[in-house]
Structure formats: structure tokens, C-alpha cells
Length: 442
Image (tube, rainbow, N blue to C red; front, side, top):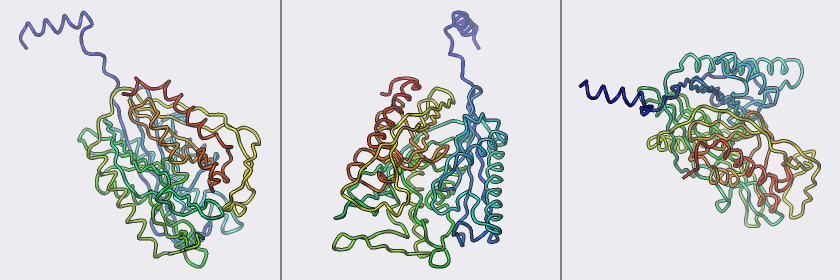
């Protein structure tokens, strides 16, 4: 190097004019393990057969100062006890502080619940099933920790019409079905985590839809159900097959969103009355077809993802105090109606966890938000890129928007929260994001 250039560099360094100190490099690791569910554990929770395997996927991110882990399990929902045990397992495997671990249910409706039910043999099968889940979680978390390597982040979006609003108006009131006219968020968001070779270590896919294509069907006998990772699993496998790495599906604001085509569904006759249709096992190809379409959207999002800039790995948690209401004691009491009294009976805290990665914010909540609420949070977030994920660190049923209560939808009647709570919660989330944003959104 010529002397004059060396002199200038030394002078700039002495005067503090050199480049700003670099932040600790980001590292990332990912792992995946199958939940072993042999025929010897069936029937369990009315599940009699397995269509495709359930899995656990874990992503660990660190930057020298901050550390976070996301674990996605193919489960419908997880209890507080489940969450505590799983956080402990991930902490032991990855050295991530428990407060910085996000445990997420993929929200497939086609997985046995993690509870000890029945007596005798069934109780023993339940214990064995829970043990298999915990073993898969530990294995995936250990893989993620061992594979940690320098990484870079990018973020992309695409649109997909796989989801549809499930609130349909009939003469007696609103009920469940498929509404082309209802509000729906068609945006798929993808966070891409690449290694030094520019190949994905992992991808995080976020989309507002329940994984309910095979809900309550597909098994043996009149009431038997089939085990399946359903739409979330099919989408993740599609992304993994095309991009490589581990793909984690995080359900978006899907309280009022279902797959466009499901094996068990309502059609409406000329009089506007629902007629149940059950395709049974014959409906299973709908999982592959819709997973293929949603996976293709994720691949498109990955292909034009833009680099995530600045900031470090940070996790914050909090809660919002909301008014609560009485819920019917039995789901069978919920039916279409034009008149319903929402009775306020107190207050309860609705928890949230926010993971920030530079100019990306991942908002994780327990409550199942309607798509319109999720879209509102994203639109008003001070972060340039915001993901809203539900079923994070627990489950708390539905939190509809104002229109849901006005229409007296299934979600509104089946919610623990009183009218207006959805808007209070959304505004509180955006206010908290404003305290975390690295700079104002363009």
C-alpha cells in the first residue's frame, strides 16, 4: 500500500473518522425432528391413523449480545405447562434464556393434544406420545445449536389466495363456511436466514390461515380422525424441498381465516342453509395441492427478498389488560343468531412477545386475531417489516375485531374477551413497537 494511503488511514483512525465499530456477527442454526407416532400409540384422542408425520422445527439466532430461539411444533395448541417444559428443554439444548424462547404451535387441527386422557392403556399411550414430542424438541434444538454458523437475513413477501374468510351470512345470522367477500389478508411474509454460501439455513414463513384441511376427518370409522401436519406441514416441506434448510411456519392472524378447500366443510343450499360435506380420506390431496401453492408463494418471496439492516437480536415481553366476557359453557350452545348479549365479567391480561431483528419485528401473541387486526398492526407498525404470529407461547382463543362482534360471529361468541378488546390490544402492540423501532418507518 502506498505510504500516502497508509498515512491517511492512520490519521482518520486517530481522529475517529474511520468506520463505526462493527456489531457482533449474526449466527444462526436450525434443526428438525419427526415426532414418532407408531401404530402402537393409536387410537389416541380419536386419531386412528397417520397421513403424514408431525415434526418439530427449531431456529436459534445470536449476535454476541442477544440470543433467541423459535420452536414450531405440529400441534393444535399448547398449555402453560407444556410451554414451561418446552422452554426449559430448548434452554438446556441451546443456552438461550427461557424468556427469549418462543414456543409456537403450527395450529394443525389434526394432531392429538398433549394431555393425559382416559384410563389404563390410553393414559399410557398419552404419556408415551408426550415423551416423543419432548424428545423430538430436544433433538431439533440440539441440531440447531450444533449447526450455528455466520448468517445474514433478508425479508420478502408474496401474495397467495390459499386462505379465505370463514364467516358466511345466512338468514339466522353468521356461521362457518367460505366467504369470497369477507376480509382476508393474502400477504405471505418470509424471513430468509442464509449462511455464508448464500443458501438458506432456515426460512420463517408467516401467513394468515388455520391448518384445518383435514380437521375432524380422514380416520377409520365414522368418527375417526387422521394425523397430519396439514397445510403448515405441507407448506414447510415444499419450501424445504425447493430452497433447502429448515422452514418454520408461523400462523398469522387467522381467527377468521381457513384454507379455501377443506375435506369437512359447509355448502349452502338455495335457502341459505348450511349442508355439511365430509370428503373423508378422499380430501387428503387438498393438503398437498394447497401446500404446493402456498409453498410456491414462499419460494417467490424468497427469490426477491431484501437484506435486513441494522440492529441486534432482542426479545421483549409484556401484556395488555383487556375486558373479558362470559363464554358459553358448551360449544354446542353457539349457533347463528341475530341477537346476542356479550356480558362483560372482568379483566385479564393478554400476553405478547416481540422479537426484533434489525428493521424486522416479529410480534407473537397467544390470542387468535382476525385477519383485519393483523393487517392493521402491520400497516401501523413503525418497523419497515412486521410479522404478526398467533399461538405463540400459549393459546387464548379468539380476539375478534369490532365487526366480528357486530355481526355476532362464531369467533365473537367463542371469545373470552369483550367487544372492543381487539382494538385496544392492537393499539397497545403498535405503541410498544414504537419504543423498539430503530428509526421511523419510511
